[in-house]
Image (tube, rainbow, N blue to C red; front, side):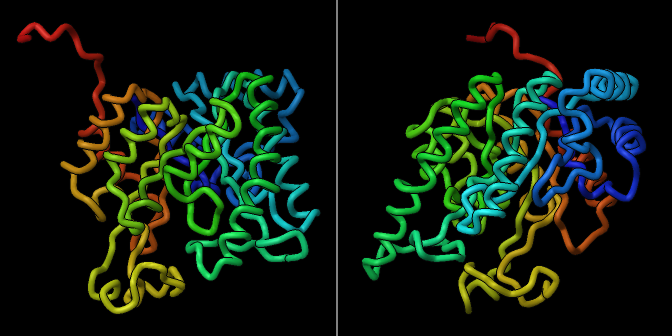
Length: 322
C-alpha cells in the first residue's frame, strides 16, 4: 500500500512539475484525469492513445521521478438521458480503458452515471426512496433498462483489455453506496468494483471499516480515494445531511469535505489502513483534495504527512507469537 494523489489540484503546473513536487513529498503514485469532470490537463487521452513514442516518453518521465500511475480518472455520466452527453462520456470511458491497457495501468476510476427516471425524461433523477410508487418504478427502469445493459458492455470491454473499472460511490449517481456497487458488480462481471472514497459515505452514516469489509469480502475494492468529511452536527440536527447549500457557504453546510485528519483523527485513518490490509487491498491511497478551508498544497501536504504515519511499509512476517 502506498500514497498517491489525484492530480487536478496541481493543474496550475505541468505534469512533469507535479510529479517532481509529489515525489519530493514521498508520494509514489499519481492518478491523472483523462476526461470528464477531472479534465485532461496532465494527460491528454487522445494524444497518448495508440502512440507508442508518446507512451514511452511518459514512462521515462514517471521513472525519472520514481512514480507510477495508480489509475486513469474519467468521472462523467455515460448513461445521461441526453444522447450527446452520454456519447461523449462513453467515448472517454472506453478510450480511458484502452489507454490504461496500453500504459500498463490496471485501473480506470469513474462514476456509475445517473439516468433519467423514464425514457421520456431529459434530466438525470437521483431516487432515494421507493414511495410514492412511481419512484420505485423509475428506479427499476434506471437499473434494468439503462444501467445494467450499459455497464455489462463496459465490463466486457474492460475484461477484453485486462483493466478494472473502479466506480466511485457518489451522491447524485445511481451507485452511491456499497450495496448498489455490489448489485452492479453481480449483474456484470468482476472487472466492475469500487473506487472506495469514504468522504461520500461518512455523511450517509455508513461505517467505513464495515463497508471496506463488505466490499473486501468480494474482492471488489479496485482503488481507494483518501478524502475526509466532517459532519457539522449543529446544522445537521436542523436540516439533516441531504444538504443543497453551496459548498463554499461553509458555515451553513451540514457537512464539508475535509483534508485527511480534519474530519476524523489519525487513529481512525490507521483503522482504515489496517482494515484495507485485512481484506487484501495493497494499492494506492490516492489523496483527493476538495477542502475549501485550506489551500490545495497545504491540504495535500498535511494529508501526506498523516497517511505516511498510517501506511505500513513492510509485509507482515510469520506470527511467531501464535
